[in-house]
Image (cartoon, rainbow over all chains, first blue to last red; front, side, top):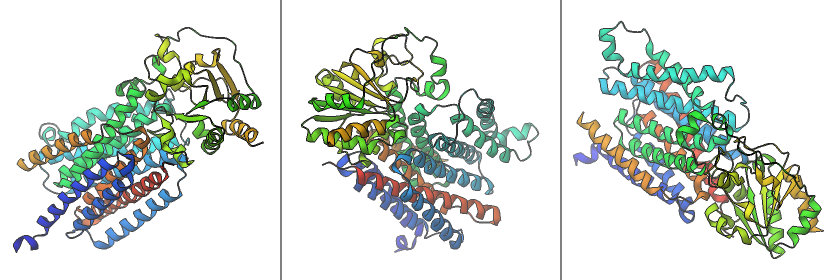
Length: 463
Length: 90
């Protein structure tokens, strides 16, 4: 009977159960048919792990109830109120809070007496990863919500970057501090300095990275928050933290790699180099006649098209044009046209950004196609409509070897019979590369706000 | 130390398991997966509940950890669920 009175044994058994549920949950989250249930399973795992932990507490239960209630309330309100267009920054923010929690856990462990050398090192690592995740996510939040305009080259950015590089030797120092301080005079309250430096380092890590590279950054921060939780698990000798944290770390890592691949760049290039220094070779400055088109003419061509491919980009998110795009798609289908949506993995500001927006507008997900599906049949498509996308449809990526984006997988709309490009002006995309697509023989430019332009075409259809 | 080796073993195996589980995810699900994984990283809540509570500083740190981890957990799961409920096949 002793087993059943031993709380820690029961706790560990429940933790194993939760770990299994987390594993199943995240597996199911990876398939369309089971994703919703996967999310429920993982929530159940979370609930049981938290509930069983509450059986043996040192902290006053009032603090716990207050923290969980308040946190739950804030989190729920944000989650329910947030607009679907603001999802990227919301994910960044929640992610940052997870990082902050592990940061505080490690801080608290530092204050506990009798840490071994190994525990000490682990505390420093957890503080560092958790802190970088938090302040880095805040910057990502600021950039994604367009509240923060700092970019590469500003003097503030440069100062922040130097804090990041300063933090690396500082990390090594604090890890070995117990050994070093036996030889050298100890630095008073070095830990508090380190806490502050970590926060600044996170700012310096993300601030120089541009908006178009955010899909990589946001997945990486996601991965880091998991790794921080796993390290906190090592620190607290808690296996469910280790398993769940590692799963998150791995899934974030996979997304990071997928995003970097979709840009044909290494993760290091995205994080530490950026496009700016890669653009020395501008290649041939292809110029020519741009052929504008009016909404009326666009309507006439679309009415006679038998297949249409819609390629959305960040511009669709900015113009909030997803609903009117869906309307256009439905009208075309009623007219007997075959409609598909070509989604590039890095279109937008986070992994799968376009999919979420179109889902919000009620576009069925079986109409969404990946580049590998649409490129082989591009020649048979009558009209490709590019809505606020630029670099992901730039033919330089396949044709012009000196181009900074050469080798990046694109949606090859230039092979379609006709291309409509909806754009505000002739400015270049995030990569700063001119897009020869605009000067092609088969390209027509529909200038103006994407939402208005499509709205005009839609009203023509209705008349 | 043996304990840490054992737990390090769990850590490594879980990472490999995670990499295998999610290697092929359709791009439709990239955002929900990221946001769902993000909710799971709120497991730090369990860690926060295990903290010691001697003195004001420790209580304050524990409260902060619980608060922020809870925001992560509740917000993460709700947003993921909201997002997934929009993905429909017609």
